[in-house]
Image 1 (cartoon, rainbow, N blue to C red):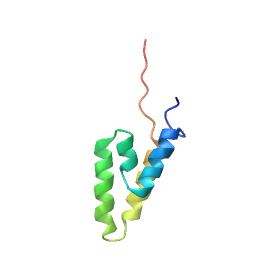
Image 2 (image 1 turned 180 degrees about the horizontal axis):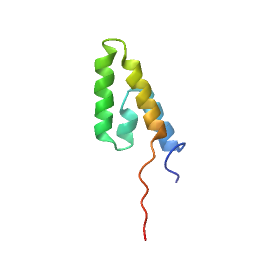
Image 3 (image 1 turned 90 degrees about the vertical axis):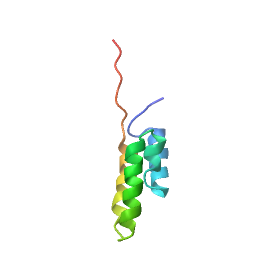
Image 4 (image 1 turned 45 degrees about the vertical axis):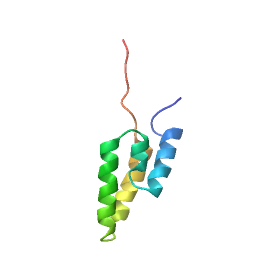
Length: 72
């Protein structure tokens, strides 16, 4: 199974973040950044700038590449 940019997991995560900012990151196991994006988007939508965080959330989920593990 391929992981990283362009993988099916990242596409699903990006789609999830499209609907709810931070949901894609939560699916990827990145709880802290998911919470940050969700809260920032909620707060900034009050002043009509939430779309910035929303887009960041989608792009971040799509471009995420987990750290590589090397075994000797």
